[in-house]
Amino acid sequence: MPTSLTRNFSIIAHIDHGKTTLSDRLMGATNTVAQRDEKEQLLDAMDLEREKGITIKSHPVAMEYKAMDGKTYKLNLLDTPGHVDFSYEVARSLAACEGAILMVDAAQGVEAQTVANLHLAHAQNLVIIPVLNKIDLPAADVEKCRRQLEDILAIPGEDAIPASAKAGIGIIDILEAVVARVPAPVENPDKLLRCSVFDSIYDTYRGVVSYVRVFSGTVKKGQRIKLMHTGKTYEVKEVGVFTPKMSARPQLVAGDVGYVIANMKSADEAKIGDTITDNTHPCPEPLPGYKEIQPMVFSGIYPVESSDYEALKAAMAKLQINDAAFTYGSESSTALGFGFRCGFLGLLHMEIIQERLRREFNMDVISTYPSVIYQVTLTDGSELIVDNPTFFPETQVIQEIREPVVNVYIMVPGDYIGDMMQLVLEKRGEVTNTETIDDMRVMLSCVLPLGEILVDFNDKLKSMTRGYGSMDYEHAGYRPANMVKMDMLIAGDPVEAFSTIVHRDKAESYGRMLATKLKDVIPPHLFVVAIQAAVGGKIVARESISAMRKNVTAKCYGGDITRKRKLLEKQKEGKKKMKMFGKVNIPQDAFIKVLKSG
Ligand code: GDP
Image (cartoon, rainbow, N blue to C red; front, side, top):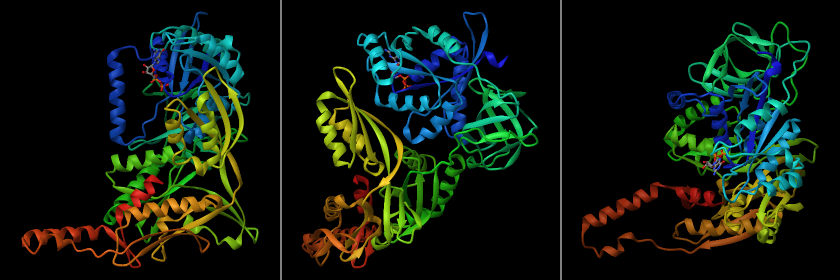
């Protein structure tokens, strides 16, 4: 099939606006999954993948569509993860396309995520096909949505296709629009091999499967290829397309979307955004847009039982083989013992890894309070990256600290705008723009420190607006901030697991909050236990736990001896779960309780 008949596109949408339903419809309308038993097979394949330990991701799908003009087109639908943690992956997938369907739920209107996603699509110069979905719903307001597209997104409203993915309305219109509006791929005239890797999965048996878009040239089995950023060379074992299951093909040509299997052993060999070229006839330079993936959020992960350390280490190694964005290194803490400092793309990524440790590896873990990365310039002019409060330099050698900031888009019902602005201010943010979306909603554009929105910003937004608010964000570099390290001293000794990096203005309130929490979870001792929050040796908050003589057998009146022994044993057990800090016992779950609720 000539390249002029190929169309590469993806669907961008806010969650629940109908992306999955539309994808299924498009596959149905093009007979991509024709029979029911094939569909079941597909599900089986996914279960198998799970057993083999492959990361579950939606594959791109190659469809064939006979258009009204009588020609048969090859349509490649690329899926994109719908979360800002993976915005680099989204950007690389979009870069593999020439167009995107922008899907908006006609009953809900444009949401924050739609705005953020559209920015990514614009950055790749994609042709946008707006689709207004769910027109079967009585609440759907197509005209209002057309106006929103124009006002908020600067997209001509009349271009929008009304549709219902569920009822099957407008599906052919969408397919025709893809054929007519999305440009065909254009091959570089030198015809040297240029393939961009936009995603990869790890298969226990076959190694790394790279998802690729061929921009020019041809790639086939037996060919010697080179990855331009890593400089490594491989022999191609198999190439193919997704129908949607992986189907081997003799070759992939310019414009194609498919997969390449070479003998790669770990996910970080197929770096997302890297360019595959021919080893003997390489292209002069790699395709644009490559970026080394940098973790944005760090946290310590420790086994609950210290005897699980080796097992946890093995689990981390396995996770990293199929997720190159996840990083880890050993660290130890007096409070938590031996564990790992882990790097994640964001909070969702962190949750996914923790969940996988629990589910796939049966590990019981504690994680420490997440931290972002700070850039520090020291007085001697040297630069330092700090992702762990333990390594925060002394105040007197710091010249400047910069913290990561994000552009946040928040969509809220108009009634809540005051509360929302207040929340943004509390989080050290600034509102850069407010725009009325419709008679109900307002969109705030803000700049906020990433560290401030990590833990509870989205939860607060949701509870404040009774679930009606939505938000999304994109990274916006670093800016100077007056950050300090705050230590918690318990009976005079610093307990490093509770150390955090906070803004100077917030040290006091945060210190007070932590001290109060610790007061609740540390049991009374035979002496008064002081809990202090300190910044650079200065105490900013203080609590104390009054002394108490604990006598568990007092209640037993010397009566039943077995009952007495049972109680003593119980107390012994309780002690085992404590950790000694200087003179103070801190229960193991104190760390979980305090760290969890932040
Ligand atoms: P995604 O999160 O964007 O992938 O959204 P889904 O495709 O999972 O759809 C979210 C919900 O909206 C599901 O319950 C769908 O059945 C429903 N849905 C999707 N398209 C339509 C539509 O055109 N009309 C109606 N009424 N519901 C729809």
